[in-house]
Length: 295
Image (cartoon, rainbow, N blue to C red; front, side, top):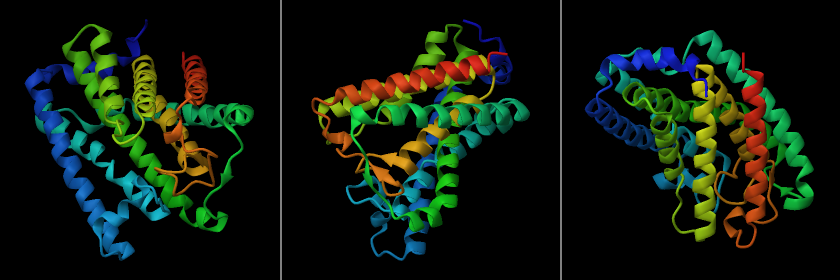
């Protein structure tokens, strides 16, 4: 495995790589994330005009809506804000060091996003006979009206997650531990664990966590091989855009989608082949991105 291009990100983390600093950094991220989420919910509640602040989170319940889905996405941006504060406060690193070289980051972002959009659209269309034809979702005119804000929300949400898991945690752990097993797997395990959703069937919860861990591991590999979070971010952005804006499950985060699945993914008892197919598609795209950015 060649991770030579990841060296500059590791070197920026090395001067203050003590684990107690990382612990305090993670604590800072947690505090900022909760404060950020509360602020976004209150602001959205005031703008939308609902009496119940939690109604703005309808994108996370069984009755999703466009505004609630965008609100839910924006609450996650606190991961990025918390990471920015943590690296300045505890590691004295520049915020830019969490991204990699700017020109490289943006080039990798657009290459990965373009490949992912194209390949996932083609492969998903080819898999329709196996997963069933979609049902109509959001009205087209409403979808278009929300599209600019929705794209920004997904861009910010995926960027915040990549900054935290691949930019901050991965580089700080790599500066402290030589073995890639520590800095590739640990952030990816945490990434998967944070997608745990209690209250669903055990098979659904298990597959979501395992699938998210696998995606996180692919994103971690892209970051280590390219030396920026751009490829992982583009990969993540394109994936989330397709599953949130174009074809989603009938429940969580479906409030912005043009189409929804004929059967909610939460009711997958005996339907695990859908997830295996999805994982194969994502893996194939990851391999394509690696090869495209190999030099």
